[in-house]
Length: 285
Image 1 (spheres, rainbow, N blue to C red):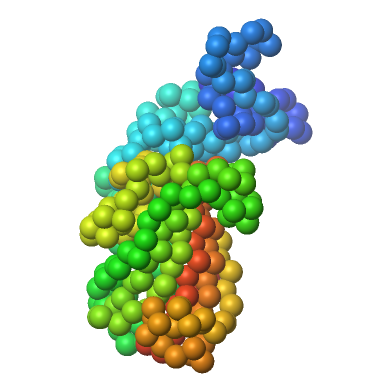
Image 2 (image 1 turned 90 degrees about the vertical axis):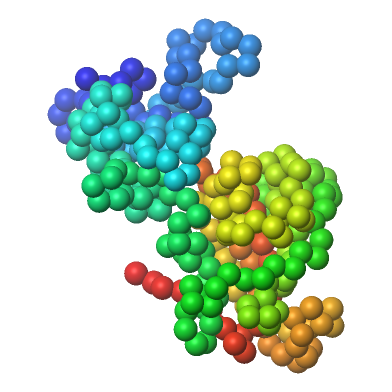
């Protein structure tokens, strides 16, 4: 059987296409066109999509709303198939896509788990700066010097990047990351104020794991993908002083926009990277 709210497959040539659930609204929302209770979400909007994509969307909806936390196991394929009233093969195909997008991880003999930035392989998926000698894991974690962490109003540029309104509250954190005592990265990080209310410089400095793991644990925000723009620049005097280089030293400018589930931008990060002891590495496949 097909779960209520998912259209049954059609007969004939169009049998592979079924109604897609728009995951911006819960699948349990009313669908009869009548008035919704006060505060209730609008009904999902059907469109055509393969059934496994609908199941993927339903699982993603549960991830987005915290039904399963980062690092926790999700139900087995058999349990999910019973829950959604579809075949295990359909569920397996949906989970395969989620795993390919690094949203869940499979562990042989243990099950499928929500991916977390606390896992080593996920940490280094987002860390592209590598030492010239050895690798990032051998180099150890960066030493963090938090220069400031304050709440302010979003400029038009920052608001546009984070899909906010100009003047909405954001948090700006500025920090220097050093490796083996050498200042290597100068970063400015902008975060939506509503999602990171209460974030302090002490939290950023004291948390021993990756910053994205702290965002998961303390604020329930998981970064699932990012886009980066890279260019070569020369630092101004203040930037050169912070990184202990001359103003004629070329640096790598990296602008990152990181997204949580459903492509909602949650972080704008602009970093200046020294490249005399490190290089930027990107594996393509």
